[in-house]
Length: 301
Image (cartoon, rainbow, N blue to C red):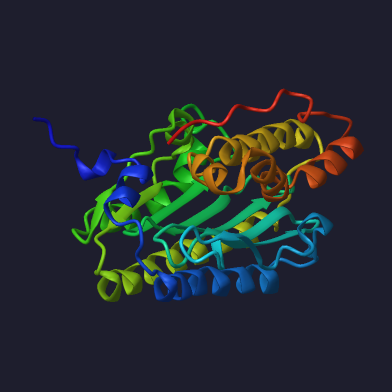
């Protein structure tokens, strides 16, 4: 009999083992880390304004009657806040899941404007109910051939990556979505930590997340000293927008959300999370159109 390695378990398998764990306190701590970093983004990157698409989504909840008692209960809940500005096209700070039933997905993403080609920042915490951590510096160039770009941004993070990768508190987590693996750069973090290890691992993750954020923010500040020439920005925008769409639309977490909310509601939330209206406006001004490319089908986890 073959035993499933925990590094390749699906989210569904983790949840099936521990489906009803109250992760409220873990949510408070992990989302608190992301909230502090979001506040830093708002303080350091000027001109960010709320997107109208996320209005009213500061907190939402899906409820249905309990099968035994008939009382209304929350099955899925979350928060979605998004911003746009001249230096960061799309900032998203959100969470979705059920704090009483093991599953949470918490996010902070900063997709920069085309003034620089500094990597975008993606940071995710989750509970399945084991702690999950994913962090990516999304390359704006093809680092397989642009060695200068690789050296500039990824060599600088190499030591920090290897330190966390070698920490035995964590196990590597492999996405079953091939696009999500294709999106991973050389310094992507994708880990789980055992249920019950929160007191040990959350301080480690706080330190790692803050260090990565501060490094990234320093890159952005340095990049803004010498903005990219106007020529070539539209091409970079097209690539940025497709990466942004696919990174959201091909996330295996979408399938879990569909089970609770249905495909139409998940599509509505994804449109906000992607920032489709911001993309539409920016591309109309630039005379390009990536939204006409057919939407990508969701993938199972």
